[in-house]
Image (cartoon, rainbow, N blue to C red; front, side, top):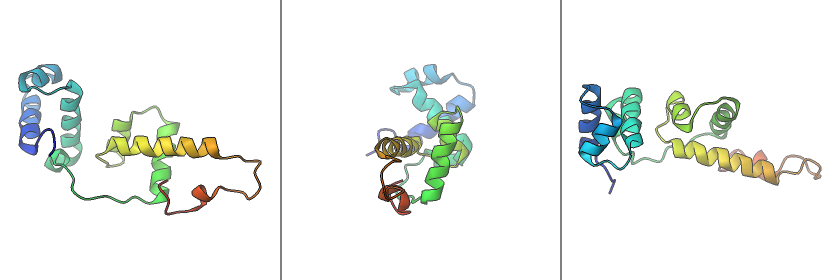
Length: 129
């Protein structure tokens, strides 16, 4: 079960939007562990509407090209994972974190002097990254 359900998140987002308090005040008032959670819900609501507050039950699949594009955006700009996720219409910043970490790991393992060209994991289009 999710820690906070849809109705609870919606109540807090509505309170924030109606100016009933800031993120710290509302987090304390409603017993939310982190004020960052309040802002995450507000940003998700502003970007995706009420659907942004619901827990997704479907596994979204992304192409290799899309993942690489998102990783390149992250590495070439100074935006947070949260901001990047919202800009590419994703509601799962930790997934971008995983892609970036996987990309960095592959680069560490890649030896350009090794014969055979591109490593197998980079040449396959259906891999994790």
